[in-house]
Image (cartoon, rainbow, N blue to C red; front, side, top):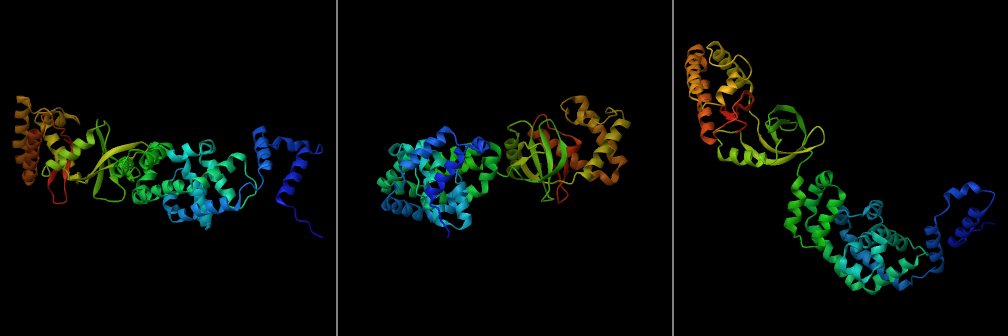
Length: 391
């Protein structure tokens, strides 16, 4: 003959085993004093939720089922709801999502003080007990469940105000939340979302803050070049795009604005982005067209060798650069003009490129008194026109 123990009988049997002196090693797994007190409370509140309370609470969860998906995407401690949703238990998912959101609603917390003590995890555990038909509730859980029933209309009203607001930003949350959390952490994201749901942040402000870290995982290839204020990375996805990342804060916006203003001088920018460096750091960058720098390298080297041969510049890697960055000096300007004349005689097949380079230098000096003219900062676009990569 088989005997089936009730849940209560099973608990009592386990308690006897704990106290059995034949098994002292079990004591290391013994419940804490707090757990014992909660167990004692549970014994005194057996079946303390009446069917009406359970049915009312279940209705709140059922009404929340259509919004569970967006809520799970949004976050704020809804892991339990997500688990039930994934398992196909929509009723438990809806109830858990609803109960997990209650601690974030100030008006409800003020009416049901026990919610604050229980917190998100405790409320999720309570919803699980209700959804799974548990017969044991602590005194605090029973009081909260009864209060939720008492204030059912306000609970539903407050929670239903959340759902449409979240649904309206789900596209942005799904796009930008992972990047935001990577940089600022889950707690900062939760605070931002709570301010949007219950504070004074409107939808556009919330989205703007969330998008503050757009595209931090853009895939990049090794650095193509670097200066005191930038690093240039090749896009690993688009061979026609490079990312010019700032070293000093504030440079990216200046590059973008200047490049846009002078499209005949600079490589064309497409957007300002965030890229993730090789050490995990998030860098501000501007995405710009990739220039063909190879032919210009050769032109620069030819002019550098010729200038050294004419004794117009120092015979080193920085000789021509130092000269071109200081053309305000009368002697430097004359030396450059001499190099230009000699270059056209020495390289007659490059006259057009030489003139183009000289015109570029003049344009840069009209934009800024100290242009950053060097070998790695110029190249040819897809139409073969010389452009600059820096100011």
